[in-house]
Image (tube, rainbow, N blue to C red):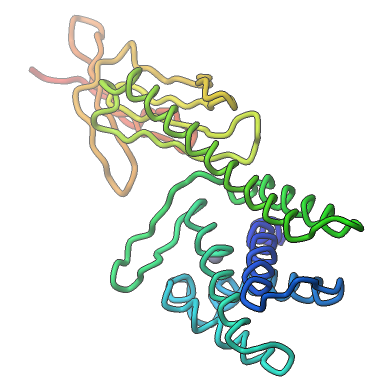
Length: 286
Ligand SMILES: [Zn+2]
């Protein structure tokens, strides 16, 4: 439950801000009363999480498509049509779902935006679900915006710019990590992919792991994109002669020197903890 709420905070805050800005823009309002402001922000916050609510009814895939966004927006606009102009709410809600929800999902754990035409999930993996930078920046800017003689609109536009800059920073760090890993370990990881995962910890914006024929390693990057190696499992006593996958588990077959000059064969199985477990051994006959 705790994780569910944390994961929705970026949607709630970006949703509130985008909805407010689009509504104010389309209605040409110069001065928005505090009550209306709060109402619009809460409508936006709710709109920002609608794809995750409608997921229960429509299923994960349909609720998170670009086709579904204007449909969900229509229901929201119908609900509020007595208080506000229908198309203004519809426009604000559509932008909110696209930017405040699908856009953010694209930045973290991925979303199949064009399902069923393109069923693959697009994923930039720049933000972790628990990353609080965006909600904190937006809440702070909104709070400042409520102070007297301060322009609320300017404050939240500034807040959005901070978010864009943050995402840009994460993208730059990720590209630098990719480049460093490719230069340092490219020759090892030709067969196994390198994984770079965003983390919510500001001091280590990304963690990475490499699985290769000969070793597995993982580490993290500092906020200046410096790589810190945490663990490396290298098979120095064993020569890897074969590598295969079975039921999604990686196995390596190794040969080492045993008694009487006979070659000892061993099979290792990769575990969840980036280690190798020996699963069988025997004598190789030549
Ligand atoms: Zn979602």
